Length: 293
Image (cartoon, rainbow, N blue to C red; front, side):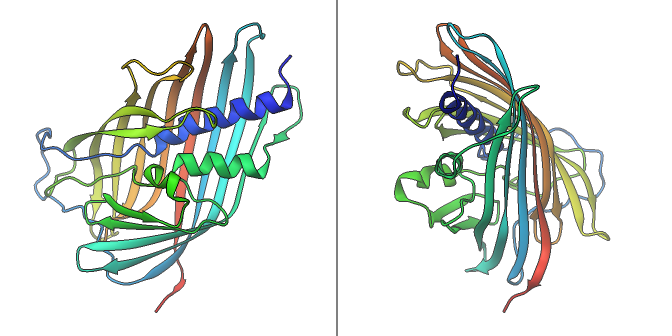
């Protein structure tokens, strides 16, 4: 029989896997498809002044858990985070983003059973290895104009590597609506709080779906794959995941306002021990919350 402690660990493992998909870093290359748009746009993260916003993250998940000698189980999970974010220009082509999470929670239930809250300590550990804002640890990210994180501060040093990855990276030059660019990167993933980090390979394709200068908005579609097909250490999970979604940005300074994606991931621990997941992940910012000097 699966105990509460075992279920909490399973859900934490699943949430780490889905957050890895959500935070897969992208690095640009020069490949792109032909465009029919007459006027290209330049996508750059270039805030002109300091602004303060509120942010929220919600992850809804459905997990099918198959473990040796345990009946196949379906679990529904929910992770939520909310807090404040400050973004400010730095040294011309850089910006600094500070995230302060005020509330974070994780819960799960199986069909016909009541909700089960996951302990705060386990929630914090899951967020730290997922590169997400954690209460009590304000995160400060220094980001260049293409969206690449060049420095991460505020979290315990052993978790810094998880915060040096990001969802979005802008193309090297102007793009038309309908044009695409691709990227790839290796990223660290911790599928189990008690396991070593697994290095995965992420490949992403982005497409500029729409751009409206009058409305100061643009939408970017993306698809991502995340795998660690190379041999892994005994006990570590083999990860195979995909995600697709859309990011809405403010065109004038490239600041992401909202993203939505659906991901599907398999964690294979070997010996018939599997977790299959489908997740819906939403991130949003309310800008500005109040002016800042």
